[in-house]
Structure formats: structure tokens, C-alpha cells
Amino acid sequence: MYQSKRRLYMNFTKPPVAITVLFLMFFVSSCFQGRNRESITGSMDLPNFVLLMGDDHGWDEVGYNGHPHVKTPVLDEMATQGLRFDRFYSGHPSCSPTRGSFMTGRHPNRYGTFAPNWSIRPEEITIAQILSKGGYACGHYGKWHLGPVKSNSPTSPGAMGFQEWLSHDNFFELNPVLSRNGETPQEFKGESSQILIDEAIKFIEKTRDIDQPFFVVVWYGSPHEPYSGLPEDLGLYDDLPQSYALDTVALTSNETGERVERPLRDVLRERYAEITAMDRSIGVMRDYLRKTDLHDNTLLWYCGDNGTPASAARTGMTLRGQKGTMYEGGIRVPGVMEWPKRIPHADVNQVISVTSDILPTLCEITGTPLPDRPLDGISLVPVIDGTMQNRSQPIFFWSVESNKVFNEDSQPYIDPNLQEGTTPLVKMMDGKYTRSFRNYRYSDISPEDFGGARVIMDNQYKLIIDEESSDPSSIELFDLTNDQAESNNLASAYPDIVESMQQKLYDWQQSVLTSLTGADY
Image (cartoon, rainbow, N blue to C red):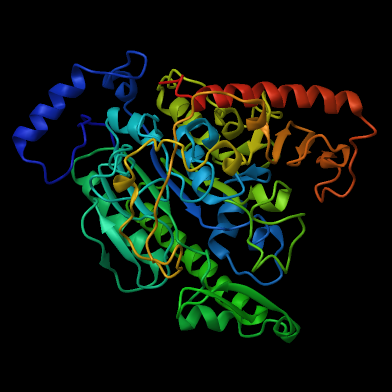
């Protein structure tokens, strides 16, 4: 398909003069270790990329992992025809930080994205910026949550490398309100997952018209609460066990935006309907790629952004913990990939991998040098090719105690006016239906800043240190190759392993805090 000339992608509506100016600017500048566009487009057979991510979609909640109720026929088929990452992890047990790791290949604490509604920093280098400079058409659809999506935001999808975007500051339900290219938000009638896929396909069609490779990111609003579903999807779950109705859970009300308690059975019926609708939309994308002969050389990759939340972590759970925790249920997520040209046969891989690996992987695939700064991910190309059995370096997780590191006197990293979101959502927070983001300057590393729940994980062992690391009971060591349920704490039995992993974890934290000071920029 892409065997003729490569054209630098700009906004499709740019006037010719603007295209000329931007084209010349590109050729006289490069921030990626001196590389230019020719080095990424030297190959005449570059793949396309479609990367999809569910919101609060835990490892258990897919049919191929044995869930007793959830229907995900498309993801199940991908898992049996492509590459299934059985031990794939989100970069953090919550959404904004994971999305930062997805974009940068770096742990989110390096640039102050500590928790939901903490923004990324403008100086970060994203995979969209890298691929855009290399001639890819880059589009973002759906949840952003790394800062406002408005046009003047220094951390909008446009500022971070996407030429087109139809996005939301946070999450959304049926009939979502989205902003196109940072403009005034507008309501889109329909099921949100399908809306995003339809828009992504329109974008791909435009790239086909100019014979250009594409990088498309679809970040769903599903299945994040509050839940809602189409009648036909809700009907699939009318037969959930009546025993679930005996329990109640707290979540957001679709009517008021405030907390409400509802029967678990009703909640799960709606949540599972959202997952099925999301799954169906992935099928629409797969069908489109096949019909247009793009499927063979398009890398299609789906994952979740963190584990299942407490309001839904009640059925089918085989992992310990839930969203917000460092146990497997909080950070282990579905991960499946299709790329028929490179992955001709189905495979299930047990190598530990994480969302921070996305940038290094795509850089190696496209022959692009990595950004010249500390990265936490590695390339998974050897996993794709079936030549990697063990990861070469550990994976780290860390929930910084931001309330102890920053206070009311901390200096904002970005003008607070630029951190005000514009896209409304159902859930009320701080008395409003839009979101405000934050990020603070950090200059001096203090011993107290190393606190917070943190993890180091290698191919066999996972060390978890709770907030009060001076308490021996707060240190847990699990052998995940034999105990994925994390039921047997081996810390007292293997003190040497604990000590070695603790030291590596501390050294890594030191590196992260150094990045947080802005030293990488």
C-alpha cells in the first residue's frame, strides 16, 4: 500500500503557504539526536499503528481469561489469532499516570503525572511527536486526561504530537461531549466507543488518499463508571445471577453526578454492556482494515489502563487487589496484538511487559532512535518475534505521596488558567462537571519524598513496599511464577532477595526524582 513517496503530514485544511513554512521548519530542526525524516521513511514498507486502550478494564474482564459473564468475542479472537501478552501491566494503578507512560516510555513520576487529573509536562517527548516528525499521520480519539484538550493547552493532544484529535479531558458515556482539534466541545449522539472508531476510520481514509502511514490512538471512555449501555447490549446480561442483587456498591449517579448506592447486579449489567460495545467497535476497526487491505501491515494493539475498580471487582476475579493498589488486580491488564505480516501465528507470551514499552517498541519497528533521556520501557520487538523469554530489566511502579511532597506554596509548572478543562462529564468534582489539572515544580530531593507504595518486579519476583516502609510487615515478596494470587509472602524467607531488590528500587527512585527536577530537559 505504502510503496510510493512519503509526504509530511500536516492538518488537512492547512493552506499551501503554511505547509511550505512548516515543511522547511522541519528540515532545519531536529530534537531527536540529529535524526531526520529520511531515517524513518527509508523503508518502503512501514507499518501502520492502531493503539487502543480501555478505561478501568482489568485483566479478568475478558472472555479469553475465563470471566464467567463478560462477552468479548473480538478480543477473544485476537487473543487466539495474534499475540497475547498474558503478563501485561499498566504503568500505574490509575489512569492519567498510565497514559503518560504510554505516550513517553517513561514512568509518570518523572514528569509529575502522579495521579488522575495531574497533567503531563510540555517538554516531554511523545511517540506521537516522534512518528509525526517521521511522516506519520497521527490522530487521537477519546479520553486524553493528560491535560486539557482545548487549543491553547500546552499539553493538549495537538501540543503533544497529534495533527488531529477528537478528545475529552476525562471520561464519557453515551452521547459524549468531545472537542475536535481543541475547539468548542460538542455533543455526539450515539454509543461512544463506536463514535470514536467511526472518527478514527475517517482519519485513516484521509491518510489513504495521500498514501501515508498512520498512527491512530483510540482511548475509550468505557468501561469507566458511571455505566450506561445500549438496550441490545444490556439484554445480553439480563441473566446475571440474582444473588448479585443482594449486594450494593457506591458509584457515580448518571442523574446527579454524585455518589449513589445501587444493587451490584444492575451495575455489572451496565458495565459488562459497555465492555461488549467497546469490543464490538474493535471488531468494526478490524473489519475495515481487512476490507481496505490494511490489516496485514497494521499493528493493532489493545490494553487496559489499570485494574478493575472496587465497584465492579466482585466477579470472576482471580487476581488479588483492584484499581489503585499495587497487587496484580490493580496493575495487570488485558494485552493483545495483531500484526499478520509480522505475527503470522498465534502465541501466548509470559514475558512481563508494561505500557512504558510502547514507545521503545514503535521506535525500533520504525528504525527511530530513542529520545535522549532516561526511559523506563524496553522494546518488545523480540517478544513480537518470539525470541525473548525473559525481560532484560525490572519494571517499577510507584504511587508518590504527593500531599507530602507538595503543598499550597508549591509553584505551578503550568499557568493554572491553561490547566482548566472544557469538556463536561457526568461525574461532579469540586462542585463542577469539568476538570482542573495540576503539575508542580520540584527542585530539591528530600529523603521524605521516597515514600508511597512502590514495586519492583522482575521475571520471577515482585517486591511491594507499602507507605510505611520502616514496618517489616509492609514489605511483601511474591514469586509470581508460582503464586500469581499473591497469597504467600516470602519476604522473611528470602532476605537477600529483598535487600537486593530494595536497593535497585531506591536507585531507580533517585533517578526518577532527578528527572522530576527537570534535569532531563
